[in-house]
Amino acid sequence: MKSIATLICAVLILAFSACKKTIGLDPLAQNQITQYKVISATDTIFGAIDQIKKTITVYIPAYSKLNIIDPEISLSTGARLQSAILPVKLTDANVSYTVVAADQSTNTYKLNIVVLQEKPMVASVSYSYKFAPNNPISIGGNFYTTNASDITVTLVDDQGKETEALKPDPAYFVISASGSNVGITSLMIPTVIAEGNYKVKVKVFNETAYSTSYALKYVQPDFAFIGPTVKAGGTFKIVPNARTIFLNFTSLKGIINGVTYDFPIVSYTPTEATIQLPANLTAPQVNTQVQFIGSFTGWADAKKSALITITE
Amino acid sequence: MNIQMKKVNRGLRMKCLFAFVVLAITFTACKKDEVSPEPVKPEETAGTVPYYKLQRVENFAATTDNNTTTAAPTVYFSLENKASVIADYVKTTRWDVAFGGLFNSFLSANNGSTATNHGVGTSAKGGILILAKSFDEVTEIPADASFKTTPDVIGTDDAGDYGAGMGWYLYDFNGTKVRDGAYANQHVAYALGANSLSLKNGTTIPARTIVVRTAKGNYAKIKMISCYKDAYTLTSWSRDTPHMYFTFEYVLVPAGSSKFEIK
Image (tube, rainbow over all chains, first blue to last red; front, side):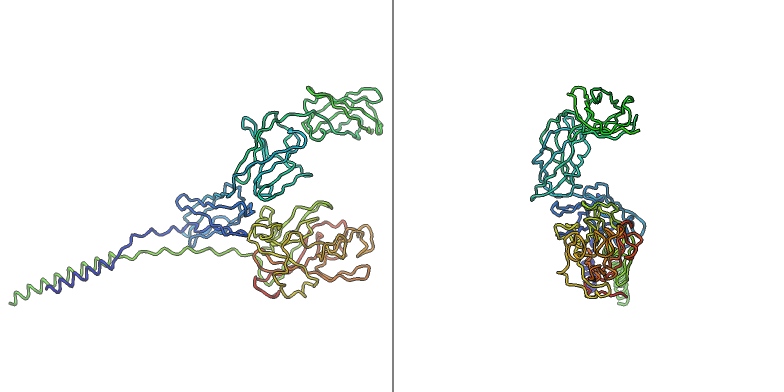
């Protein structure tokens, strides 16, 4: 009897000790992104996948020279992505991936791209003429990229109002690097902008830097050389001289052989004016010398000699 | 005694039954943990172009601007997918050949490790070179070290005007190198891929074949046939024939190959 009881106890002890029940994790969902990988020239970068928050965070070093990533994505067995994998610009904040499992359950992950870069600093702002509308400025700083599309330059006034991105003057625009310092030349100050104090704002990938404040002031309006060929009774266009804009353009007169003619301004913008040929100026005239005088309220008159040809 | 023995046997049976029940419960409760299936990587997307098959691309459109001083915006082509690739994807491994420089006529490969390459920063391992052999004559894949990785590196041939080394086309500024100098024959670009080219001075320029290591490390040989729209032979090319529309043939072989074969 005693030996039977002992045997039972031994079996039970063995049974319970051998039967170690692990409190394991629930089976993984089968609609997951399991790996997010970016391969650059120098590194393999793995995205950090948060299966609770449903986010993928990928850190891209600025030195990689990438402005776009083309990820490789691994999924749970049997799952697929709802959309094709496309390259993603580093500045694109609206990318998500929806995984569809074999059982048709879905999971959507939001992508966050963090560019690892030093906080940019605007080391220099310069201009060759004036800090004024329609004038080019040059900037320099530790922007780490010479890809113009990675850098957005705007002006911000004292109230925080921001201009559109400054556009490059294609004839002179250069972006070049010396180590981490990047210089950008010939970004044009907008033609429509109020006088005031402005900081230059530089956004590089997702980091932003500001310059010190600069006083923006208008400059004397002027118009470029005019040498139009115009049909009698017709109109012609004139543009401001380089680095100027039309401000309060009120009249344009032309003196021909001592006679002053009024050239009515049909319309104008800061960068162009449409002028009506005076009705009493008759054709034909070939290369007739005209002394033009433009009046801009609040400014001195602008004068320009030109040759005008009038056809019938 | 018998009664005593029966009592003992009954008790023993009860205990055995009890032990059996306990063991049965114990072992049935002992459920082995489920093992989650290993996540597997989905099938990698490969290029759509099969190896060892001759491919032909007609009228791959590039610039139509006759700007002789400023390079046209570079356009990109994937040999592995036989498709153009948008410029936004320049820093990816999705393209294999860039058409850059003046008139998009200077070719380069996608290489992420060369600082000046269009694809710098990516894992692309492409390269390009040109041989003075016809397409059919090129059977061996040159050594990797002989591939060039700088941008816009193969274009005008030295035998023509504005030559830049051995090129895939001959540019005839005055129209007198290949033909009679008539107005229509000036400024013609003669692709050298399909045939050798006889010049007016009696020399013959052998056909050229371009060899490309693709962004992903496969190899292609390319026969450049024309840069004129819908015009694939020399006699149909003139200064006013719409350009630049590249027509070329190529064959892909996988990385690690030593020979080009068409099967």
